[in-house]
Length: 293
Ligand code: CP
Image (cartoon, rainbow, N blue to C red):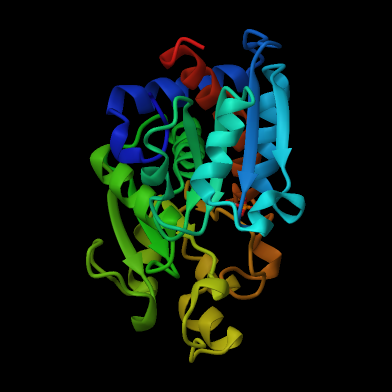
């Protein structure tokens, strides 16, 4: 079974192919309609962008879409995660899109006979976000090699940071991190000073502070975080003319980024969301092809 659950499973060629195909789809190319296929979306964690852009992408493929409703499902009668997914396979679903708070949840589903698209696994990975970020970067710069990228914020709890760091480094970009001590992840790259690096970066990638994943209350106030680790109006002035500002969203306005900068000329935050639908179309197309559905 060919799934898309981790960026580590994709070769560079597959990544470039997905990025280029998503850009073609954005320019107006159409996918082959597949009215015979069924897809179920299972979101055990909250989502706006990922859930609904997968849903739009699925409709563009003319798939039959089942939005699994956890609140009225037999999960509430104690049915296991595996049994829930196996049930969806047995009633005729051809693929599953899953977001779950358990890291690497997909390992439990190895014996399923239908493919899985990972829409986020706890603090693990977020492949569709990583791929849409790569698409957005490639669309702007036409390359990854030698780009200077800083990832700022809640590194420790961020599945976006992990997927993007691994992939961008593999593709030849230079990636560094800015974060408070409490959000450090020693397994990733070096931590630098925001004010020293800001004028050198091509991409300033901000991360959401993931309050829902913190076991302890963050010691910094919103204002302190913004002043030390946020993209303030002052820091923005030091960015290169050609630099872009990214954020996977949802945004904590006034914390990771000044409210006024969310739609500033260097921000591609809403373009990332637009690109997400085309990338998810490309991913679905790949899953259909790779599994001969
Ligand atoms: N970026 C992202 O995953 O957003 P959602 O949580 O709204 O899907």
